[in-house]
Image 1 (cartoon, rainbow, N blue to C red):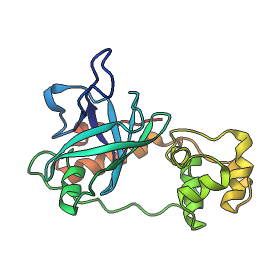
Image 2: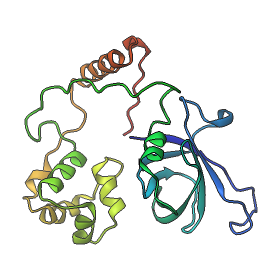
Image 3: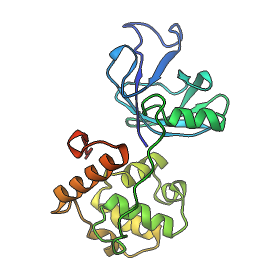
Amino acid sequence: MAIKAHLDHHAPGESQRAAPRRALWLETSGMLPGGQEANVTIHNLSAAGLLLETGLDLPTGETLTLDLPETGAVEAVVMWRSDRLYGCAFGTALGAAALAAAQLQGLPVGEAAPAAPAPPPAPAKGAGETLGARLARLRREAGLTLADVAARLGVSKPTVWAWEKGKARPLPERIEAIAAALGVESAELAHTSGPSADLGAMIADCRARIADACGTSPDAVRIMIEL
């Protein structure tokens, strides 16, 4: 899941050491505090920390403060960076209740998470896959972690994560090495699909499913695709 958030800016000329710890505000009921525009996307939130993406420059070691509904103020330290991705670790691990409440921040207050609609019939293995989806599938089938693949290729774990999520694409000359790391023939990575010709029908079907789950009309559902 992805949670939109806003990270306070340091004042111009203000040093990191002299400045107070920056506050990271999570989206609540589709709004951010004070109507501020989101400048952070949280891609993963776990008991140990979070993975966020932002165009802001966050130095390693900077401390962020999150105000979570079940816990209050929680501090997270920036541990590593890869381009726009930042890995942050909590000083104290979150409890199950606090983690669940934070993950539900994007839902309207008092509304339970909608039941997931019945999944459509599974497509043939590998049919219509993007390169990222195929990399993720082949890695899991080989019993490898992101760290395993990163170590075999001599790249960072966030780089492999970005490949699988479609946020970056490996260079063509890396394909053979990636295939070797996954234990497959390079031909398995050479032919992957982009958006299918019936993308409009797929989006319409997704919009109808979401509307049905939320008790609204398909016209009220907006879908954003990040490429």
